Every structure is written in structure tokens, then in C-alpha cells.
Length: 137
Image (cartoon, rainbow, N blue to C red; front, side, top):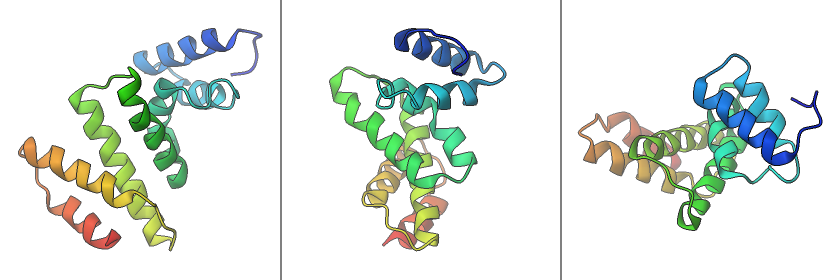
């Protein structure tokens, strides 16, 4: 969190370890690591930072972080199916919040369609997702 002179790789490992263990203070550690210029585009940190950004109403940040993670999926960064659903859901919901604020999320519809596809495949209720898609269209 800035109180040590650890290297950037060590900061990333520490923040992700705290996130994975859901240790107290993990959101602050992830946010602090993401403020480091060398770590701001790190996919694991961006993934870990989705929920804290959403919880604090930083919806454009949620979408930017989700975009970063998604771009890196073809570069070796891997997510489980449930993690992809989580990513799609929060990016879609954040896009819906941006739309309610009169702001455009350039690829919000894409995120919602990804979430709809995943939810449909998993047999989940897709009504609320379709409502968000209608809102974004």
C-alpha cells in the first residue's frame, strides 16, 4: 500500500495473494498496486480491481479494467468460466450505470451480450440481462 519499498512484481504478488485469500485490506492493496505505472495494465490486478471499483461507483474504471483483462485473454492470461461470467456481468452492469448517467460505454452492449450468452448457456434467468441490453440499445 505504499508503505514499503518492495519491487513492482512483489507488490503485484502481494496484492493478488491478499485478493485470493480475501484478506482484510485486499481492495486497498489492489488499488495501491494499480496506481504503480508499471502495474496499471496488469491483468490479474485489473481483474481483482473490478469489484472495488464497482462498489465505489467508478463504473468507467470497471469497464476499462474489464477491457484490459479481456484484451489479455489471447496473450496467455486465463480465466475460468465463472471468472469470465463475473467479468461480463460487472462490465455489463457498469455499462448500464454509465448509460443511466447519460454516459456512453463504447462496448457496453458487447459486455451484456457476453453475459447473456454465458447465463443462457448456464441455464440462468436472462430477463434482467435482457433489460440491461434494452437499456443500452
